[in-house]
Amino acid sequence: MENDNRDNKMEKIVSLCKRRGFVYQGSEIYGGMAGLYDFGPYGTELLFNIKASWWNANVNTREDYVKIDSAIFKDPRVWEASGHIGSFSDPLAECKKCNTRIRVDKELAKIGEKADEKMSEEELNKVFDANRDRIVCPKCGKKDFSVARAFNLLVKSNLGDFTNDNNNPTYLPGEASQGIYLNFKNVIDTTRMRVPFGIAQIGKAFRNEISPRSFLFRTRELEQADTQYFVRPNENKEAYERIKKDRFDWYLSLGIKEENLRFKQHENLVFYASDAWDIEYNYPSLGFDEVEGIHDRTDYDLTQHSKHSGTDLSYTDPYTGEKYIPWILETSMGIGRVFLAVISEAYDEDELGGEKRTVLRLPSHLAPVKVAVFPLLKNKPELVAKAREVYGMLKKEFGAVEFDDNGNIGKRYRRQDEIGTPACVTVDFDTLEGDTVTIRNRDSGEQERLPVNELVKYFRSLLG
Figure 1 (tube, rainbow, N blue to C red):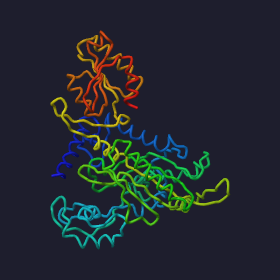
Figure 2: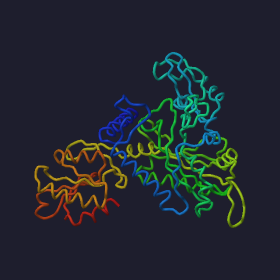
Figure 3: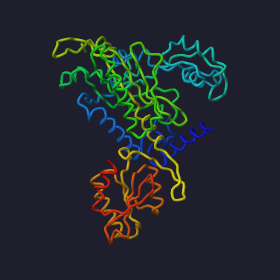
Figure 4: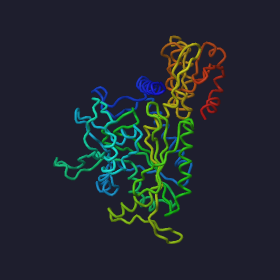
């Protein structure tokens, strides 16, 4: 019953996101494309606020991080150096009856068997063969699969190639972080940053996912927010633990309850990693799954790019003259997954004034609309004019303020509740006489009257 409720909650979230202009299916008028989504007006604003919070926590309030924004396309040798061409793959098997492909590691995990994409094909097939009778094709229900094989996730392109032979393809980025490694030397040479320091970036990544699923959780186009913190070799432990704590605390600042978050350490490390942890969120219909990875990558990335590019990416300490390849501590999160976690955490259903309602209890700094202003009646010019005056004053101060005169007051309240607006201001006939307005709180439904000239101060306090 609990799983049914969780599945139902995910369905309601997807419906709300479409109905209220948060998220649309990509290319929907042409039937839609799996694993691709467009963010609507409110979704774009929420996405912007999540990014702003991330930038603020990781760069704006610190002196040891800087920002970059690297190009999407990169020299194809970048992906050879990073290992993506050789090993960026999912283990897939194909149903022999209906040709549906499955992620073998994910299907094994569902039945409690330890398996992941870091295992060799031989290792994975050994576990797969021992459990074939327990894995069912999700489409036809059969249990007859091919052997598991690696399926590379890089998306090919023909940038600048008009021969159509595509023998030397370029690639869309499999991850956004490579641009940071490529610009490590540029940052050192053009700024005053010195090790230890970090570089942060938000960028696009593309995955040739065979089975995009669970709404925004696994998509073919995604946005990643990454930090790479460069430290002296073997001076990684203290900084690594601090970064883990900082990242966990950031999710709490988004209004996510601590019981819905947890750390999970990787059991099967990739060969270059010294340590790796995921922060997991308890998603509806999925349970706990990764929202962010925190990785101790040693000196692998800069060493690889030094070898493949022929450019020395070592660092020389300006005080001691010591020369070394820095080790890297990485944080990497999919912003779509954070968006889904924030919406899932904020989604609530309750009863207010004897009526059931749906409400997004978003923290005020994330809410796409901070305040909504209503005239009590839209056919009374004097009320509309005064409401417009109040709206203009608040919008100048807070930006994300909405004017709404469509429908009765109750419907307007419900509409603002569903998009997470913290408070609504109603201009009525008493406003015309005493210059006071009614403020209605989203979470409690309680109302109070305040003079118009006190609204800015009031909302500065309420919205932080």
